[in-house]
Structures are given as structure tokens and as C-alpha cells.
Length: 557
Image (cartoon, rainbow, N blue to C red; front, side, top):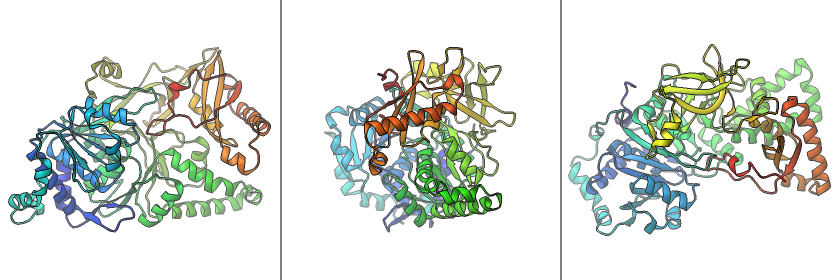
């Protein structure tokens, strides 16, 4: 059990960092100090108390990253209720299901999302609050929330006659073994499950962030990954607020253009991102530069290439704000070509690994110790790991973990919980890989997507796809099995083809035939793709931007 109590981490932080900047919405001039955030939390606690919210009741939150999203989250947990963060990209029917399945009593949401929901389908909701200004958008018959809000200032004065002070920050005593958060996964299997995370699971991640000094007091961070997903939540938000960091909430789609502008303004001290963002910056900014004829020639000269790489590294670091310690990439596999290039130019990046069921971190390594192609080093002291049914030749098998970060189970789903754990209590990650002697983790693919070749070889489609996605005019791809042969479904870069006048059936066919030939020369004999099949639309994805592979297993001509 983690020694630090999760809730008391924030009680301590608000008191110690009272005057410091805490939360800012990007593009806005107003900033909440730690003291002001604590006061807003106190106001929400009075609302909860008036509504007789009980310890262990659930409160759902859905909306874009903003200051009041963070305040609602902290207010719920520090009161002793269970927070249910919901990705804003879920469709209304999924949101109805999650709110009802979790038995949430209250909901914090944006005005726009609330307009899309149907209140008569939310069976347990007693009240709904706006993430714009915390006004009450809806109250069930018999509730008096709106009346109470009109007199909330008077209630604050009566409760805190000397004004709200740092010594008034006193939060509930709740052991770390209690469930504090239920996070509904958006997996590629099409089935959403509520991951029950305890204070200990959350503290395991935050305490790791504190001890490894990922963020420090008075540093800056830009939060652009969805806070309803544990990756961004644990480090851009929870670790940051626990140590006195200033968090700027982007609150808009993180396109490379938007992000580069925000990085320049915020100058974050740590960047937490997913591969898609870094890969787009590489493809749009760096690749065109290094593929120029003159640059290619210069890079082939040993004396020049080191200087050129140093210049590229400096430009990239400056473009990302210039003050970050490292860029942590997680959430999915990083393209090998991008990883190799960044390592070659000595860019300060590292690749981590985790899953919602571990709140989320399983492995991480500092950038200057990071081994390329790995997913970092197991969080020793927090987790143990082993490989199940390892192949004698390669050491590859399913990764299993146990320890501080591992979830309690799936909410109201005992069958799924049993399937997730081994008989001796290890969590089955569903990821295939190996572990070296220094506890570095190397992932190969998912157990559910691995294809067994005709001669018994293990084929990992993700590895083939990463190569294919680097070839000309390929935006995304899926490798599937059809009649015991591999087929690549490709969604082409139609905009790029149009810009060069190549968007004709003949040109597209010739380009993809060349891509197929190039691909098959770079893979093993048993991994060769028989044909490329053009897919006319972007593949359907989860809110976390992972392709819903199960929809395409039988989509071949």
C-alpha cells in the first residue's frame, strides 16, 4: 500500500501552494490560484452537503478540458464521492449508458453536450451542473439545488465567517483502498467496461510522478490530452496539482498548428503526448526538409550530418517551447521510423507504456536512459511483471502485471474481472512482448490481433502497418487475414494526391503497387502482404483515436 494518502496529497498542496497559479484556460487571462481552486471546491462541497450526497455516491463529468472540469473532479474526490470521467467524444447513447450503469447521481457537463442528452433517459441523475460557470442546468422534481445556489454566497459566509483560508482546507479521511474513480474504457473490441480505480492506484501514479520529478513546484504544463483518459489525467493534471505546477488547459482540438502555437506561449516543462501528434509534426515539418536533394547529400557526409542533426534538434526543441525536460510518448506504439530519427538526433523523448487498468502507468524511463524500441522500464517498487507462455525462441508472450497501480476490477462485471486476472492474481494486459534483464519492456502487439501464419509463425499486424503508414500517400492502414493471406486495407491521402493531380484510378493503382513492392521487401517472407485494398473513408475509431479493428476483420473484396 502506498504510504501517501491520495486525498491528503491535495489537502497539503492547496495549503502549501496557496498563492501560486494553479489552473488557466488557454487563451483566457483569468487564472485560478491554488487558494481560489480550494475555495471553489469548498463551494461545491456545500452543494453536495445540501444535496446529502453520500460517501461513495457517483458524480459524472463530461466535457472538454477546462478549469472547471478539474475543479469538479477534485471536489468530488476530496468530498469522498466517486468520480466518473467520460470522454466527450462518446456518442449520446454511450453517455446515457455510462451514466446509468455507474449510477451517477450528479453530472457536470458542457451546455452543448447537455443539449444532446435526453434527461428522461438518465434514470438516477438528481442534478446537472454547467462546466461553464457551475450553474444548475437541471434538477429532478423535489430537488432544491437552484434555490440553494442563489444563496450559496450566504452559505459560504456563514460557514467561513472569517473568509475561506488555507487552514480551512480539510478534506475527508478516506483510506487508499477505497474506489475513487470509475473510468469507462473505449477499447477496440467494442465493449465498454468501467475500470474501478482506488486511491492507491491513483496515488501509485502520482507518487511516481513526484518521486521522479516529472513536474515541480511553479513549473508549467500544457494539458491537451483528454483528462477523461487516465494518461493525461494522471500526469498533466493530478501529478501537476499535487506538486504546485501551473496547468494550462488547451480546451480545443490539438492539431499540430494549434499545439505549436500553444507550446510557444506556455513553454511547458514536460510534454505528455500520444504518437499521432509527434508523427504528424515529423511528417509535416521534418520529413520534407530531410528529403530535399541537397539535404540528403549533406546528411551523407559524416562531418556535416552531426551539425545538421543538432540544428534540427534545436529547431524542434524551440518549436515545442524550449523548456521541457522530456517528451513522454504513450497511449499507442510510436512509428519505428520516427523513433529511430528522434534517437539519431538526440531529441529528449521517451516512450512509456500503460493501460487504464493500471491508472495508467506500467513502465517509463528517463529520456537519456531510454532504450529505443522499448516501452521504458517497469515501475520497480510499484509493479511486478512476468511473461506468460513465452516462446522459447523469442521470449515473447503475454505481459502480466501486479502491484500498487492495478485496478480493483470492472464495475458490476464480475465475469470480465475474472477473465482479466490469472488464478494467482496477476492482471492480463493483453499485450505481447518480452522483458529484458534490466526490466525494460518490449512490446510486439496485442494477443487479440496477432495472426498465426501458415507455418506457425506469429505475425503482428501493427508492425507491418507502421511500415506501410510511412509509404507515400498512405494515411492509415489495417492488415487483416483473408483466405489465409494477408491483405492491407489502406485509406489513402486523397488531399495529397489531388494537390499533385494524381487522384485517378490509374495513378492510385500504380502508387499502391509500388508501395506493396517496397513493403514486401522490408518484411519477412511470412509477413508479405498479398495485395492492397483501397478503403474510401477514414477507419472508424474509438474516442482515444484507436482504430476499431473488429469492424474490419471481414472487410475484404
